[in-house]
Image (cartoon, rainbow, N blue to C red; front, side):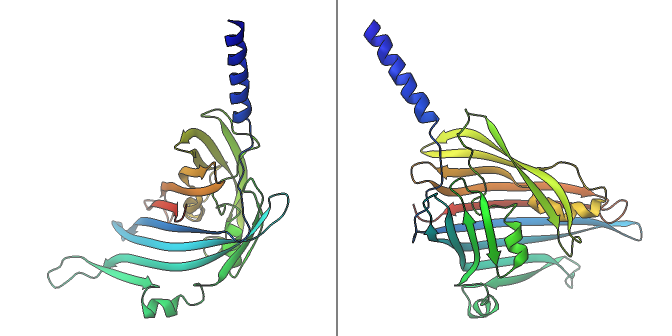
Amino acid sequence: MRQVFALLVVVSLAAAGSAQEPVRFKFVAGQPLTYSVEQTTTISEATLDEGTPVVLGTVTKLNLTRRWAVTAVNPAGEATLEMTLLGLKQVISRPGPKDKDGKPTVNQVVIDSATAEGKAQLAALLGKPILTVRLDAQGKLLDAKGDNPTSAARLTVELPFRVTLPEVFPAVNGTWDRAVVLKLDPPQGTGEKYDAAQTVTFKGDNQGFAVLGLATTLKAPPKDPAESVGLVPLLWEGDVYFHRATGRYAGARLTIKKEVANHAGPGTKLTYETAYTEALAEK
């Protein structure tokens, strides 16, 4: 009996020790990390035309492939990565004029790097590093630089790999927070800043992947509803997947669904809805 009890104690301590082991990103110099992204965004705007409600909607479908190349890793596990777009297709659909029978039509604008025309349009973005970041082993952003300063700055909110890892994973349903500042750049604003928090919930493990629930919330909404229009696209919710054995971000499934009332005056409303999926293309 004593031997059985002693064995149980050893097993329990081993399990506890394993549960407390730090979980970190494992960056390897020279390693490419390629991700496919799909995003569909629907924006509906209700305005008033001489007192009559008018609803207009835009649907944007985006598909892209991007590669993060790990160019250097120091002894502390901090990595420098360069991001290159390998391919992009965007389809924007808007209401068109009515046809001869009075029925509505849809106008589409398509940019596709797989076509000669699209490749020429996207030449400044494709096939070369356009962002350089430094991350620590917990995924914290240490630095970000790029051809577009606004895109680089946005990474302080939308991290390259979406979440930071805690010192030690909590029990299932345990959480940790990251304070962020949302900034309204032109044309939505003039640099106004709003405090927000990203809360991550450890939902458990599934086939070697840690499932991390992500929720981004404002500490307080803007007094002017018009300013909310520029903040809504940053309020992501959903799940992020981290592969424990390889120490890699495996992808995410995120959504936003928000309404902003009176954004353009009394009686107006904007509805913003988007679904985002990202997946590691190579294991």
